[in-house]
Image (cartoon, rainbow, N blue to C red):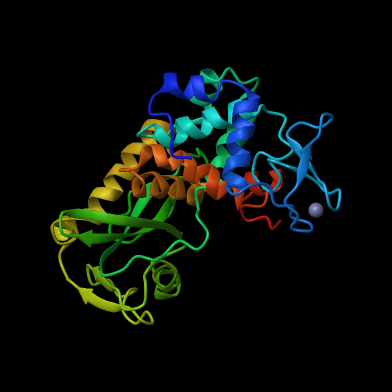
Length: 308
Ligand SMILES: [Zn+2]
């Protein structure tokens, strides 16, 4: 698992066909040898009749190397999944569905879009540890891409026609540590406190611009720095830099973000930023994380609010 390709050419040689990808999945899944999910037995045969499926020698249960992963029951070849995960994990800005469709010569835009959407869903690691220590917290607005959303030029905290995002950045000695971004309905305490509770460890200190929505979150020390709007980027430099990178990325890769899928794009930005020093490991973590996910129904991908 440590021999990860560091270039496109080596990647192509390593994962050039279905067998190579399936072997990689099997090794990732059963690093100490096959274990039957039904009876715990350790002996199995590979079936000739079904692709990359093993039959338990004890109970007869059949297990595919893709079972429980986002690749399960996919009509796409494993090589397409691997390429998509590799491009998404290692490109510094990620890759849009349109770019992916062209690069992998996929049949339709819809296929490429679903591929991207499924990988993006698996970027949210379950059980990830919350931000700790000193954390800059601030809010920002992003213009919607939809033509139906009227973009208004209201100043201050008026934000009709915009999407509201709250961000948090760990402050380390040499710069930013890990980040989190969340979509919020408004900037009230009722919206901001759940974000703080979900993303900041108990005992963390939230450094803010003094906005009234932040104080009082349970377990969080509040460190307000009341400033005029112009000076906020000086008091909270890292979260402001993250916001500006986020906006440039959203325009550059996606030509703007849509309201329906905002949180999954935020998760993608966070995933890539938090793995910026280990891009090649991000691929492994993408597939590794994905292996722990239940397959996401199509309905949930096109409408994130829908329940499975
Ligand atoms: Zn078994």
